[in-house]
Image 1 (cartoon, rainbow, N blue to C red):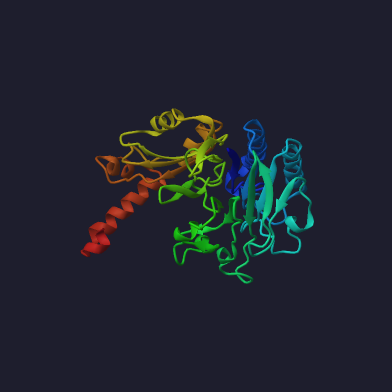
Image 2: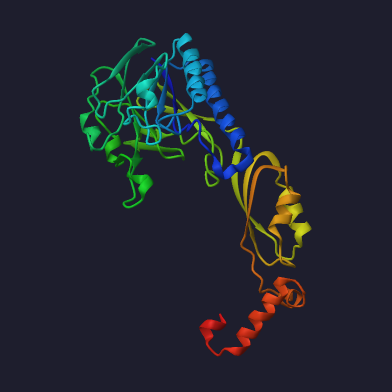
Length: 354
């Protein structure tokens, strides 16, 4: 007996990416292309089902183009005999009457829109009876939905949950369906496909995998760095085996760049050495440069070298002869340093001098 499923979450199709400015539309197309690749991988790897653990869309009312993309790709899965199961998340919630999951048909996919686990879906794969359980979380209707989960005896029981494991009290993003690690180990349940956290994580109990977050398959924010994945989960023994499939077309990275002793051209050369059309780079400049840096000039000099570039200046002015050099300039920066020196000389208050 061997059953494989593909587990994906937090696709966020149609995301605005306002911070990306002129390349936001390109990034939205990236996400659409990644979803198509995920479905192609499902076909190539002959999985029995695709489990989508929330936030397939970035909104409960996505654009027609995004809806048609998903319908087309799910249609491809259906034509290959692959089941698809979807739970809404906090972004594409089904609470609203106008929710896409209430108003639109998705061929070959089952959408879980009940707030309790009362809609188990059964199918056969490789001679194994599989049952998928899912909910659309609504804390007003059912604050503790895991209490309603009833695994089917003799079946391979899989659950899909858009939730926060070990939520931090007072953190708003952690308030969506908080569950504990202990909650993940349910008798008779073989795997919980989690969504909501955008970084991958695996949870075990007594040496067996019981649940996982695949993380988002593409970086959505500058701080979502490193490789991004979907999971192919295989059931052939006591514990599920997870294979991580790298998905991201572009990588987000944060780099700390020491520019001590550098002028602007040196800084430009340092940053250009990291250039890539597929890189979203946040560069934190640190150290003591030879002169005051113009981030605008540096940014213009690197135009087109990266998919997206943000430069943050964390350099310091009080090093070696930099103060002397700036103080001697006729520009505003020079007059500002001269003014600060006069104020420091005129006060005896230690705190003010600092």
